[in-house]
Structures are given as C-alpha cells and as structure tokens.
Length: 131
Length: 131
Length: 131
Length: 131
Image 1 (tube, rainbow over the protein chains, first blue to last red):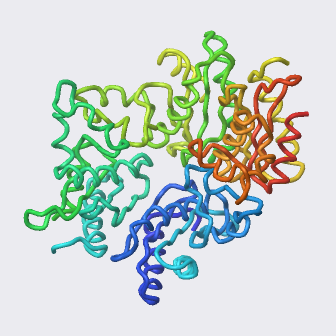
Image 2: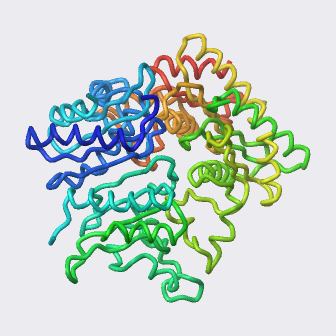
Image 3: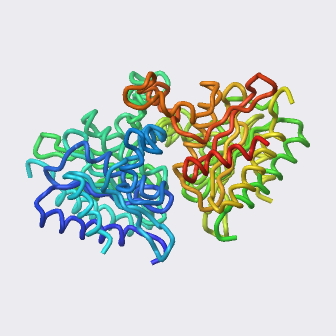
C-alpha cells in the first residue's frame, strides 16, 4: 500500500467499529489521506454529535503534525512547550489521544481519528483500525 | 424505517456508488440524519476535493430546507425570491441539484448529498441512493 | 516529475514573475500541492493585498475542481449550472481565470494561482509558470 | 532598508532555510510586512502541514503585538496577565517562540515566522533569517 484509497479506508473503519462494538462504546471514525483531506467518516449509532468534528480533526492533526495526537498532551499543558497550539489552526488541532498517522513504511499516507469514549477507549479503537 | 442509522446510511451510499461507477464519474456521497448531522461520508477515488464540502452541504441543505437542492435553483437566480440565500448559513446552503431529503412516509428523516459530476449526474447518483 | 517539491515550485513562481515583470503588472503567485496544501507564495512589490487570498484560493480551486478556474466562469453565471458554487467551500472557490492545475502526465499534482491584474493577465502569468 | 520588499523577504527565507537544512529540520518560513500582510511563504519538503498556518500566524503575531512570540509565553499561562489572548484574534495569535519582528532601526517593518521543529529550533531558524 503506497497510497490510501476508499476501499482501504472502509476496511480500517470496519476494523475500528468492531473494536468499538466489542468495548460497547459508540464512536465516530474518520480516515483522511496524506494531504489531510477526508476519505471516509462513519458515525456509529448513539455516538456523540461533538465527535463528528473531533474525529475529523484528530485524523487531520495526526497527518498535519506527523504524530499521534496523544503525543501532544504533555507539551500543550500549562508550562509546556506548545501550550496554546490548539488555537493556531482554526481550532483543527486536537491535543489528546485518538488520532494516529497511517504509514506505508516510513511515509505517512493518512490518518485515523476516533472520538466517542474516553481517550484510552478512542486510542484503543483507532489502533484497532490500523491492524 | 422510522429513523436513519449507520447501517442504512452505508447501504444508501453503496447503492449510490454503484450508480457512480456505472456512469463512470467518481463522487463524494454524504448521508446526514434528520438533525442535519453527518452519519457517513465516502470520497470515491479520483473524485474532486471540492466535493467533500459540497456533498456534505448538499445533504445538510436538503434537510435544512426540506426540499431537493435542485428546487432552489430558480428562486436563487437574480430577481428570484431567494436570491442570496446561499450566503445566509455560513455558506452551507447549496443551490443546485444533488441534495435530496430522505423520507419515512411524509417525514424527513435525513438527506443525501452527492457531488463530483455535472448536476444531472450528481442528481442521478443521489436518486440511486434512495431506492 | 511525479510530485511537486519546493524547488520546482520556486522555479514556477520565478517564471511567472518574469512574465509579470514583462507585462508590468505586479502579481501574487501561489503554488499548492496535489492535496491543495500551500507550497510557496510570493507577493510582488506593489501588488494588491486582496490578491494574497485570491491567488491562494485560485491555486486551491484548480486542484480541488481539477480544472482551470477560467472553465468555471460560464457555469457560475446566473442561469448557469453551477451558479452559487463560489459560496459552497468557505469561499475558497474562485470562479474566474488565473488558477491552473499542474500535471504530471494525466495526473494533477498541484495548482498555480495568480492574481493582481485583469483575468487575461493573471491567466497569461499563470501559464508562464507552467512552461 | 526602510521597508521590506519581496527581494529581501526571499533572502531572509533563504538564510533561514540554510539553517533549517543545517540542523536537519524541515520548516515552513513566512515573511509578512509592517501591515501584517504576507510577502512570501515557503514550505520545505517533508515539513508539517500544520506549520503552514502556524508559521504565517507567528509572523503576523510578531508584527501585531510588536514582540517576539516567545515573549508571550509567560503572560499567557494560567494566572498570567494575558491568559486567553490566543483566542482573541480568530486564532491568529501564537503564544510560543518562532515569530520575530523585523526592524529597521527602532521601527518594526515586518515579521518572520518559522514552524516545523521544537520551539528552540524554530527560534534558531527564525533568528538565522534576520542576520
């Protein structure tokens, strides 16, 4: 896989949905490509309306900063190096876990963003999408 | 069907994608619920990046104005009753065809929005999603 | 060339600037990549402040709609098929000439957007950038 | 130099790019004029997509607040005098280092903004642009 396509994006979302059902937390799951543009987004029944934006923004952040969103958490706390970064990109940077880059070898070809549960749950579901 | 869920939304998108493949025009297809909130969005390979927003906005418009977006076309022309309505809702109202309400009996329970081809093609694909 | 990089983008801008100097109209010139993301933007001395956004949006539109922005002009006039499209994407779609896709074979790998003069002048300068 | 022009802006960006290459961190580098308006922006290959906005906003902030963005850091922490200022200007104020005013004598004639690495790296590259 050198570039994401809709087929792959749907498979990743399905895998993530499986995990979300297993842990019984409805999620919104988004896949974006390497340019940060949306490929697919599914909102599971009963999941949070706020998660529509959050999952899309997590996927974008993972691509735009080339790291899992969980890695931002410490740096953005008061006194942290990047305190305030969450307001620099029209509010699109999410600074807690649930967004993970999708890689082909060393290259980032997209991102997955999951929102709906606790950060630990969102992260678990996002990771399930990458398998 | 009294309320849309993700399962139904995915089936509608699949049906629409079939038609898009048949007419050989890649599309972005979005389903929103009766509150105008996104349920699912798929961007087919090679479709237009601009269509991500347009398809979502068409689906929203169909619910928010309770009519197919094609019905807005005459009213928004210069001299028409609703000239200018496309700028009243943060640019979310799309005034050409490709967005259609999804009904359960007489009740609007959601909307489908399709973008990627000509208005006639978008409308054809959106209608295919409703069958 | 299968993907744009900064080196190529700078060369394209230089070529466009040459033409702009030749016709004596200061321009803002922008290159975006295939995902619509900015690679480089130069504002020539004395060019219009409004052109900063317009040139960036023209480059984005050329990629996002996979066509020169000049091709939109007829379709967006009153009574045209796409009348109103310029308000569907947060105002990023520019519907007059000056934005052109950059291709590698048949594939669109980016866009150039030029603003500062008449549409004919903008288009001439954009085309000079592609040589 | 009493006013910035594109020629000078390009030289500053080149100098900054040299430093960025030397420390092996790809950066986005922006120069704005004394009105806070963009003069030139370059995105080096492999640099972060998020840095496009951040570098432009850093350059703007340095001019708009007439100080290096690093000087905001203490004042915006919880309990600090300017806590919350990063959300007052449509998210354009960046409150960590990497943006520096460009001066002619005592007068501020523009700003440089750099984003892509750690705050220390961004600052080092921005300073290299000013030499």
